[in-house]
Image (cartoon, rainbow, N blue to C red):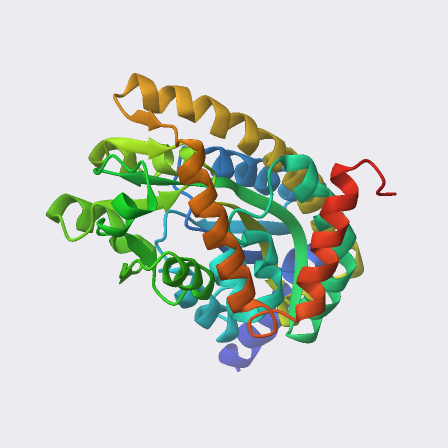
Length: 342
């Protein structure tokens, strides 16, 4: 009888406690955690902007939408990141053209060698093609949250590259599985060393390679410049970048969170592009101060590289890209340069 009375008292106390505690405190929804990966290292401009996005999303969602950042390639190369996104281990990532091209070949038109001469042309073409690429990424199961870029790419080497002949003698790194870079190197008759981007620094230290291609900012941020003597001032290409999220994870967010997410990334990616361009310009001065010599080509050598551009574009036209896409972009750039573009 005493045991029964004790049981009744406990039951009454438990029920009373349930009335005293707010339902929201018991069933509070756990925050949404976005697992985000990038090759960009801590301390870089790219990570600074991502940190701003992390703070903004947390504040605007009252702590209900958060981002956990895996920086500096800790999640692997971009192909590794894509595999993990497909498995649901990661939800969102920042990609260069190499990763984007694994999903959609056409987006690599922004990386065509010796194609764009200045940033205005890139912005113009990107605005023209945004809707097209946004729809194509969606067909493959990804949300395009924003564009950015690595910047104009240059050759960095321990050889004093002043011609195609010298370049052909280099032990040039090529990002493993990058069809655009392979096409360019085939066009200039160079046999590069294929490696993951995460293996480049070690390979420079061991002498497996003596040359790389990267933006000035990238050379500084990744510390590759510390193993390099020369930079060729001729821009090889402009490396595109973008933020993608899996459609599956995006669809699991509330409409309110989807709106906050899109607005935040769109606004900050525009700022990142501007900062990246400024930092690339400043990085050239940093490289000079650290003893990297900037090499300028003679006009005859520039013409050699221009012929390589045409050969590379012909090689990818109709294969990696629809022929009409390159034709349309070429026409649009020519119109832009002549001031006739809308």
